[in-house]
Length: 450
Ligand code: TTP
Ligand code: MG
Ligand code: MG
Image (tube, rainbow, N blue to C red; front, top):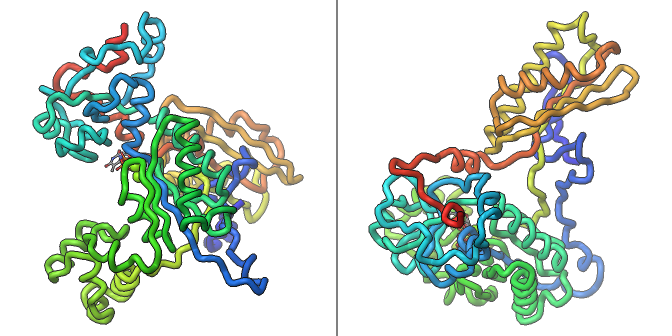
C-alpha cells in the first residue's frame, strides 16, 4: 500500500492521503509497486544486458473493438463517436432475431448528413485514408467521407479489452507500465528471449498472443528507452514491429518532426518552428545553453537529451486506480453525539479533500464509503453505490453521512475515513453525457437490429 503522509495540519491530526489504491475495501487490489531495480545483473561479473524497452499501442483501438462485434464492417471506413451506446441496446438486440454480425452493411448509419457537435474518438485505417481521424468534428468528417459508418462509443467494451490485452502481456513479460487505455511500456531487458533480434522475437510473441485471444492487432516499438520505443511503435502501424538501436538515432529518429517526441506539444512545437527548428535532428544540433535560454532550464535540458535519444526513465509497474480516499486519526477520541460539531466539520473536510483529489486526478466515482476505527482499535466500513458517478463534495458528504448512520456509534472514535470507489476517468464520463445531437438521435446498428 502506498500512503503518502502529508504534513500534519494545525490541529495535529495525521492525514493519510491514499491517492490511488483502495486500502480498506479491497486489499488485494492494493498495487502500487515500483519496478524492482535492475540490479540483479550488477552484482555478478557479467556485463549488464542492453536495455530493451518496448512500447505497445493497440491499432485503431475503439474501432477495432467495434469490428469484433460487427466483423462485416472489416475494411470499410468506420468512425467511432457521437454518443454513448445506450444500456438497453444490448438487451434489445438480444431479443431481436439477428445477432450483430448478421446486420447487413447497408443498414448501418452513415456519416452523411450528420449535424451535431459530436467528435470522432477514432477511425479505422480505411477511414483515415479520407483524412478523418481522432478529435475531428463529425460534421467535418461527414464532408470528407460521407459514406463512413458511424458507431457510438462503448467504453465498457473498450475497458474490458484493455484489461484483457494487458493481462496477456503481463503473463509473458511481468514488468508492464500502464499508459492509458490502449498502450503500455514493457521492460524486455530481463525477460527470457527479450534480447533476441533486439526484442523482435518477444514482440512477435506478444502480438500473436493478443491476437489469438482477442482478434485485435497492435504495434510494438522496441528501443533502448521509453522515449525511442514510443516513437518506434508508430513506425510500422498497424500490426507492425519496429526495432531501434542506439546507432539508429541519426537515420531513424533525426528526420522526424519535433512533435514526434512525446512531451513536445503543439505550443512548444510552434515555438521551435518559429526558431527555425522542424526536425529532431535540427533540435539535436542546437547548443544546450541556447535551448535553455529559450525554454527554461528544465525543458531546455530535457529537449537536448531527448533529441539525442537519451531517456533514463524506468518502466514502473502501476495498476489502475480503484479508489481515492482520505482519512484522519483524531488528536483525541471523539464521540458521535457529544462531539458532533467537531466530528461533522472533520467529516465535511475529508469529503472536500476527496472531491479535490478526484478532480485533480481526473476521476469520478460511484461508490461512497466510510471507515471508522473505535477507541478499542476495531474498525468498520460502510459503503453505498450511487446511480451516477460524481466528484461533487456535497454529494459525497451527503452519502457518506448516510453510510455513517448505518454504523454503530455508541463507542468513541479514533479515526474517520472517506472513500470514493468504482472510478472511471472524468473524460469518459463527460463523453457519455455529451448526448443529444441536433437532429434525431443517430440510430445505432443495435437499434437497427430490432
Ligand atoms: P490512440 O492509440 O491514439 O489511437 P488508436 O488506437 O485509435 O489508433 P492508432 O492505431 O493510431 O493507435 O488512442 C487510443 C484510443 O483512445 C482510440 O481508439 C480512441 C481514444 N481516443 C479518443 O477518444 N480521442 C482522441 O483524441 C484520441 C487520440 C484517442
Ligand atoms: Mg492505439
Ligand atoms: Mg494509444
